[in-house]
Image 1 (spheres, rainbow, N blue to C red):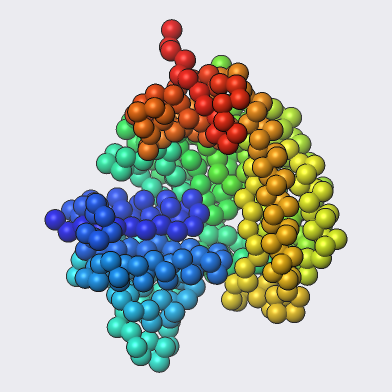
Image 2 (image 1 turned 60 degrees about the vertical axis):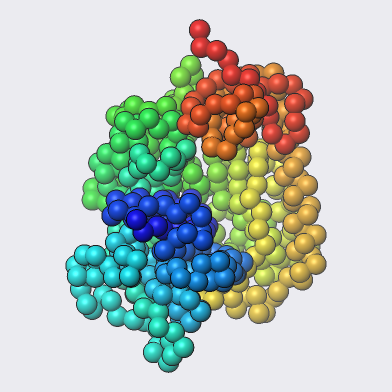
Length: 464
């Protein structure tokens, strides 16, 4: 049997795409390779949000060529959409498929023919946007365009054979925002939503197959439903899932601050607290910067005081919720004064964790030109990152310590030992459960006092 390996890079939405690609390949009779060396077909599902993401993909391609020179290499995802010419010119790459044609990836054979995929596409849609001269040193075929007419791989039907714990259900793709640092609108296209009834069908399948926690995700999740007819919003979707399906826990992934509406807060209060909560008390709101001037240069659609109103409302509604944010350091023109303003703002927020990353200029974005004019010194970025890491550690530890001696609902994960089983709590804390337990079990765990600084340790509370 031919064997495949799918390597995923980037965000939850990208991982959801990769999981769907893998499920599609299995449905066509391929098996998952035990090791990279034994794969006949290697699919790289790439990210391109930073230059480091691009470098990671190129490094993995080189690794495949060293370890498994006979494997056929297919590259898809955001890097393939943004710069197909770069990838097609890399040694060993056989096929480049952008997000615009990602739906045909699961139909690939080892010989790189595409069963049923190419035949059902309009030949006009298969034009190669890469100048022929740039592919002179490569025989890789390229399928990329800017219409995104064939990007219908937007959902993950729960795959019973995937052995997934806490899988992502991507219900929205693309973004209509134009943040000055972001390449996503070019690599993912405009905002597009999966219809409500389709989403409900996938959630029911998830529940029927014994799933315990499902993560609702998207590139700009808060915009779900705006493009549908009739129009809907995220609260409509979450309320329908919680009221019309039966499963233990729904978790919402990243939502822009202005999409944390009073209705979403009311839904959270209804389903995330009480005797039998089914909505994870967890909010992730991208921040990027706490400086008003930098947010304006980023073309973000809120001001710091708007953001603070949202985090305060969430903490008031959900006292034990995890609240996280993405923070970018070193955006062009960020002075010491801007950073100090941002630092003070972040310190004042009820964050329990932060995702920190340095600014990375992306070709084709306004930030690319801003970087040329107003770059921030590398040493300054490193100092600022270190300061925010220390602040993050302090906030995370303070939140974690609140639950020592209390009980938390947790879902067990893969990768345990005879002594301990990793798990994640409803409010997004890492927990090591004492004892060996199978993955994908929802249990109550009593948290030991002072057991560990970075991971809570808990003991399962027997069901009476």
